[in-house]
Image (cartoon, rainbow, N blue to C red; front, top):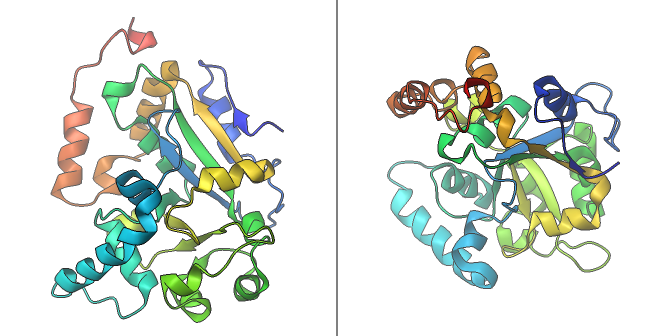
Length: 276
């Protein structure tokens, strides 16, 4: 099956089916779909982390300085313990460029992020889908032995800390070819935003590594579903009716304001074929 999936630009439910049907998954889940979803407003965007976009090949050099200073100045506001994984989760949550990428259990949350910017409704978006259970089957034995008792699901920060308490300890893990490896974990429930977005984080065992490069070597483990530009308004209406909005995903006055600003903005008929 092709890793890049395109649907008819008039077929909203075909798009939803492409995201939710599990026939492509190597892990063959028996209870739940073991897929992490990530939405992009532009189909051209890759899976570079915030840290890589900030510093590129020097990411590994600057990461310890970013994290040390974050811990130093954030300590008065939050105290997640000593684990690098908890601190990394807090840093990502509050916008620090890190080696983490945000994902969700929900394809609807991913579609929200693919359609949240109405100024980009003239270009196709994308939703990346990764079978994390199958990806974890390729982990080195020490990490795999930690996740297998959990049924091949997601790591927690506590599980990660048992195998690699620090990021430098995690970076010693590689595959048989000496390449960095990815894993997916559930962040601590820091606030309602993480809970409402059904959040998942991914990370690589190298601060400068790219998940999309690893996925290219394992194309059976992912799909990149293209979100047609012509379909974005219909998706947005569908999500609003399903209550998948900024008000819900970003609890608080800032999320409420984002939702109202978008909801009451005028539509551009050129970008909305139904109104043309």
